[in-house]
Structures are given as C-alpha cells and as structure tokens.
Amino acid sequence: MKRWMIRLAITLICLISLALLLDRFVQFRETTEDIYAYFKEKKLTPRISLFRAEGREIRYISIGKDSSATLLFIHGAPSSLSYYKDYLSDSTLLARAHMYAVDRPGYGYSGFGEPMTSIQKQARIIASILDSLHHPHRPVVVVGTSYGTSVASRLAMDFPQLVDGLVLVGPSLAPGEEKIYDISYPMEVPPLKWMVPRTLVSANAEKLSHYQELKKMLPLWGRIKVPVIYIQGADDDLIYPSNARFARKKLVNAASLNVTLIPNRGHLITFTEKEFIQKSIVQMLDKVQKRQLHFDLATNDK
Image (cartoon, rainbow, N blue to C red; front, side, top):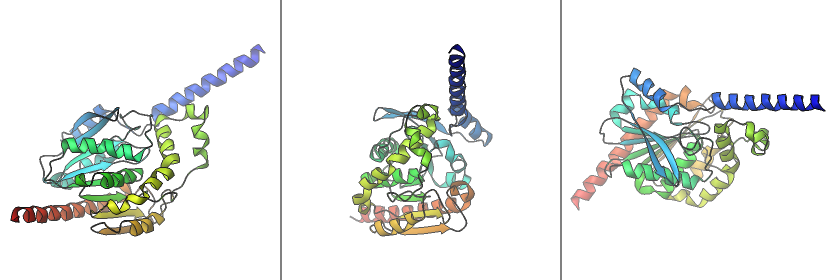
C-alpha cells in the first residue's frame, strides 16, 4: 500500500509539473516589456495601456501619429495583440492610419485563462475602448482574424456609429461551419481541464460556445451596411470556406462585399499572405475615406 501511494504521489507531481510547464510555454502572448523592445528595434514608439470595462481590465496597444483614419485589429483564438506586430510596425499602414490592437478577454493580459464566451459582451468592451479613443470625423476600419471576425462583425452590428469598414481574414461567421476537435469536449472536464494551458482553456470555451453565439447573430446581419472585404484560404480546414457563401447570403445590406478565396492556402493567411492583406486594408482605407469625404461635403452643403 505504501509503495502504491508513493507511485501515485510521484505520478501526480509529474502531471502537475507537466501542466505547469505546458502553461509556461504555451501562451501565445508577449509581455509589455518584450513588445516595447520589439518596436524599439524598429525605432517605433507604441503606447500600451489598460482599460477597464465589464469588470475586466483589457490591455491594448496604440501606435502612429495623428492621422485621418483609425485601424483596429481583433485577434482570433488562441492569440493576443502581439499577433499583429508586423502589421502595427508596417510603414505603409503607419503612414495611413493610427492603429490599435487589443488583447481580447481571456487572452494576453486581459484576464488570461478566464474566458468570456459572449461575443456580444466582447464587442461591447471593444466598443467602449474605441469610443474613448475615436475622433468622430476619422473613419474606422476594423480588421478581424478567425474568431476575431465574429467579434468584429458583432461590433459593426451593435455599434454602427463606430465602424466604417470591415476586413475579415479567415472569417468565422456561419454557425457550425468550423472544425471542432474530438479532444475539445473532454478538455472541459476536470481533471483534464486542469492540465490544459490557460490560453487553450479560453480558446476551447469559445470554440464550444461559438455555435450558439453565432446563432444569436443570425437576425442581425442586415445591420451591417459598411463595405466588407472577406479574405480566406481556399483550403482552410479549420474555418470552412463555406463561410464565404454565408457572407454573400447574409451581407446583403453591406455597402460593398469583396470576397477572395486564396488558392492553396489554409487558415494562417495572416502571416503567409501579409502583403495581400495589407493591400486589402489600404484598399478599404481608401474606400472609407472617400465615403467620409462625400459625407462631410454633403453635411457642409446643408
């Protein structure tokens, strides 16, 4: 009996050590100090701040001089604002817009490992941040990736006064049109859940609630009236390309809808197709700034 207890104790210690090790190295986030160091090497000076909303402390980054447009990046799962470092330091984008990116609730340094599965609440938090920073006469383009496209779309639905254009990359829009791994279900049950890295706890909780959250959005797609650019890998096996059909069917009131399915590309096109995505963002900036100019001229004529 004593030998059996010793073996059990050793096994538990090993499992706990493994869980701690996994959590230490599987985080998909960077400290504020590391992010500042990255931008310092590029001779850029961002500002990283905290904002409190919905009982959460949310970390966000801003960079760029006073500009005629705003760019907001919303990451997927698992991820954090550091996912967009290459975009936030891109000279072309810096010349065109003041840029922001957020750690969504449950990721980065916004309550790491404490998921918020409500897309509506996440959009409300981001709207609070954007509203506190936004200049009313500067158009806002929101760029979302993967799960972030769901949040970006909900933001445009619920706060149309804050969003002037959407760029959706690897979009997850249609209920049930995404892959769910078999391991996702047991990952929600202790003791396995206790061994899962915290960032994956957040991602898994979002994944398993995503179907119901997207169903809640079904009656709301007609609210989106801004231009939309949809970009996805044609071979995406995580978020199925059938989401493109859904977008064409539901975004009937969008000012314009440009859908691109990139051949021979999967889900991680944010990295593999950065040049194309950057050009698409610039294209959207051009479009919303022209719309803003026409609006301002029409307002002045009155």
